[in-house]
Image 1 (cartoon, rainbow, N blue to C red):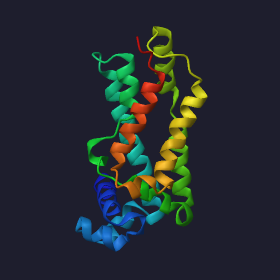
Image 2: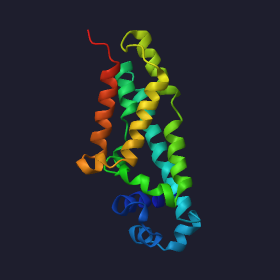
Image 3: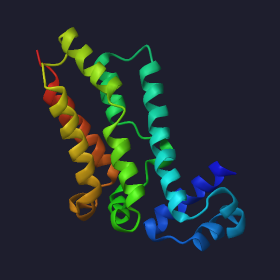
Image 4: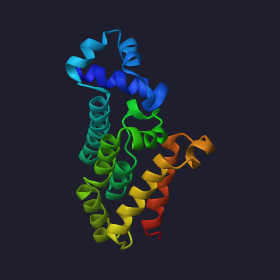
Length: 185
């Protein structure tokens, strides 16, 4: 039931952004609000869980990339930087900034999830440097540049104004970061 409601929440979020109502969600799911409230106490708790649901799915995608024995260190790093589960590929992450004022706890959770879980990524960066595939770069700068770019995608209007799909922007960022660290022979 929880997963069904979370998926329904993602669906109405795609259509209306964080301004969706619980009535919208109930209509999307074909169930009563009362049923939804047995699982989530309010919209804020639903949004908070949607953040974790999204990031958990991204982490699952990262694990799949890492488990592939046919991928090189470079391919693994590129894969985890740009991983996005299929069900979220059409999601407009540029609307997330709208939650900052009305749902600050949810927005803080997004920030927390963006800034955590870097051990594997930085481990691959170090491994690639040791293998001679990547030039030496400062790990902190690498992480900050990526995080800042994602935050700008979410906060800024440039991506939305250019009508570039979020996934295209993410892929361009990953390509730029990878080409900036790869040693060309």
